[in-house]
Length: 453
Image (cartoon, rainbow, N blue to C red; front, side, top):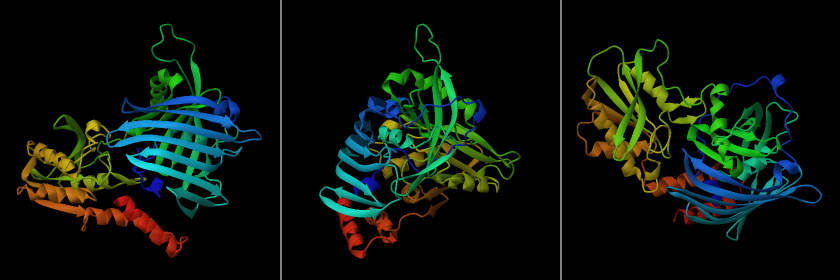
């Protein structure tokens, strides 16, 4: 089933963001998010990443006689290595709970033709003529990364009049938490004569460890969807001039818009922000240097796992694997350099991702090694690489042609060929699904083998 093995734009490794709130007693009453005015009609979302336009989505939601909604959208996104040309339809009841979803077109350069029918806790998926059933939380909403209007329809589940934190399930096994946290009155940019401020209600929508920000206009329409840590924005076309002023309000309400990479108070090391040139882009990172001990000191470079990770590699919410390793080592006299992967965080190089392979990421690590060898504080003969997952493949690649490296450490590195690793990862959810029969699992394994081919 292709829907659940796609490489998604919004990574579930993105850490949740803590938010400060306006006092609820100060907030005016909000318009409902579940209404004909909020949902029904045509629109266009403009989609951007790090300030660069990557595509658009045109959609229409119709109010169905007797209650309920019917939506359809055409999503066109062009990212390096991730072209999407997808037509989707969604049928929902009057509570915005979906009963049927169809997806047809191209996703990540692969053909997609899938229908999902939801009924009584069982979802029936028909993918290119093949059907299978799976359990899910009854009453779950459906969202799909890179398809903004699905988030708009899911957000309609929130009872704005009741307010507070509200929870509802997301297909197949996620839980969403949503809350109204403020009202912003801003003026659009680019107007010759500043108009009167326009009001928007601001919401947080948390999906697992991912926190999105949503703004709704005074009709209750979701007009802006933002994932701040990845600089991802979807905005309704008519509200494009409000993106900058609305984002400017974040500094007043978010405790940490960006991760704080500074050293903890009284730490036995310093934290220096660095930029490392790699071909025609830069890697941004943090270099921890021990305050005491021998000089020059030994050093470690961290290499992240697959997918574009920020320097801390936050594998699970509140667990930043490389930050903990870095601070532990720096407190014991070992310098540590960790960087944002190319194309994410503060690093540039987004345009290189369409052709970048593990060998290219090995070049990024080689650039980091070369950088450390220019630092007087670092012993050029005592540099090691700590690689996690794909980083556990990269570290040996770098070490193979650099005899001066002192050591490599592999954390969950691979011991098998890449195709074997991928097939194992694809099949693992089948093996752990107690609700599936052996026949269903065998069918799923065969499908995964065909997809891998």
